[in-house]
Image (cartoon, rainbow, N blue to C red):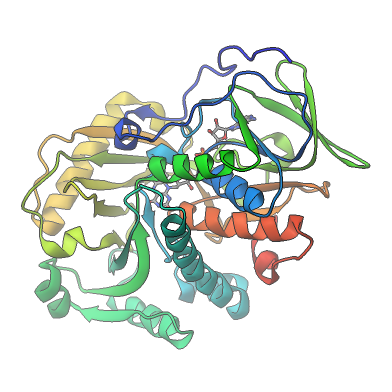
Length: 409
Ligand SMILES: Cc1cc2nc3c(=O)[nH]c(=O)nc-3n(C[C@H](O)[C@H](O)[C@H](O)COP(=O)(O)OP(=O)(O)OC[C@H]3O[C@@H](n4cnc5c(N)ncnc54)[C@H](O)[C@@H]3O)c2cc1C
């Protein structure tokens, strides 16, 4: 088949330079020509979701064709600050009110398990991606105050998720931050998201997978024996199943009212030699609107983000990027006393939210063999792991009991 030419879309998903794209082995070379081979599965999207799905399905012995309209690992994944959180954007106490206790508890427990599974997968595959288990520190803010955090810690502990409630004095003694309260809990991690994704894609390629870029999928259909996808260049590709892992971009068939795209900003500092120990060893975020979150990497860079806006376009304004980066740096200083100076990297990107903070991991409505994995918020990488597990089980004909929690809605 014909070689695919330059990307059919001029727009990039983000502006500025995410730090991770500058790190070694964060790229994966793709083929530029499609072959005529028939694959068990086509994965559309070569970010963390596509990489985890491809890794899981090739591990199960399937042949997988991975397609992307951009180079691999160049969508929103390298924009991620990669705090691999078990904590879902919607606190357990609130999620129970929104979707009922049973589903809420299972979503939170599944999230804890997904972080553990992702850390152990990275270890098993010996991925060189700075994967490191870390506790999460969740600070009281203008959204949840001390009393609400105490209830939240209690609710988590009730279902076996360890969550230590810290009073103001405890937090001050441990981290020197002045907030009315916090929850300190194990079971999270951080990593270099580009290296993690590249490593997973390479694992899939070492089995029965191929990756081709740039290829843009524009439509889909179901056949009696499988699926067909059409490309912007007029080809039709057939396979047994397809999974759309297209992040914050999706075809009209996947549009749903419960999900919409917003904007977010992030930065990475130069390496700082004198960071407090607690900051090196935790990931931190706050129950505030807009919120601040931060972590460090192995070299002592502070990677921070937040200042989200509920609008899909504002992340493409360079002036806004400069202003948001100043605000993030100032908030970090006010909270922790750490002065990062002029950030080494700043970037902004789309981000998505769902009404209940949970992703959509399901068949595309009206299709039996075409799935999509989307709707990722602040713990998107954890949800990508859950997505890969649920989709791999569904394709193997052994539905995952938690699949009902993440249906289209
Ligand atoms: C600034 C920022 C900070 C974040 N911080 C965190 C964090 O700390 N922790 C966390 O867990 N998550 C975080 N996230 C969220 C996380 O990064 C995302 O959930 C995750 O990267 C989504 O990965 P993905 O593979 O689904 O999408 P992507 O990485 O965007 O990959 C989708 C791919 O699909 C391709 N594509 C789209 N449409 C088509 C098409 N029609 N045909 C062919 N290819 C197509 C795109 O080119 C792209 O490469 C953050 C996100 C941002 C933007």
